[in-house]
Amino acid sequence: MVDDKRLVKQAQQGDGRAVAALYAEYQARVYRYIVYRIGDSAIAEDLTADVFASMVRSIGSYESRGRPFLAWLYVIAGNACKMHYRRQN
Image (cartoon, rainbow, N blue to C red; front, top):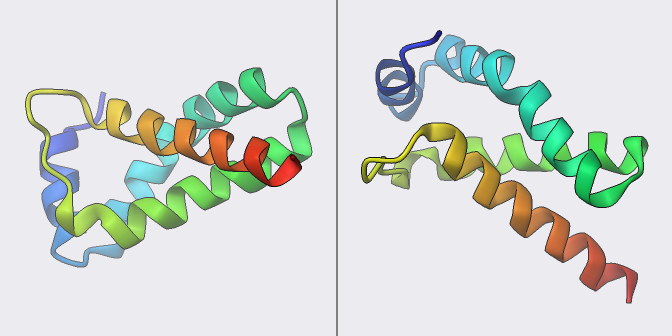
């Protein structure tokens, strides 16, 4: 189990190792979340990469608000799935 709060704080301060640790911890779960909703592994890989790119861009504004860090990643992933479907139409 990773110490999310510590890693997030370090990532917010620009620590690349903390960002890498968050990616290593959560990449597989975010991928599974997306592939379940999209049904295509190649697209899910691309969207997972987009989620973590968004995480890096937005981590400075992240606040836990009593919820796990993974919940925030799932919100980003859900939005990525919605955008994928919008682009399809």
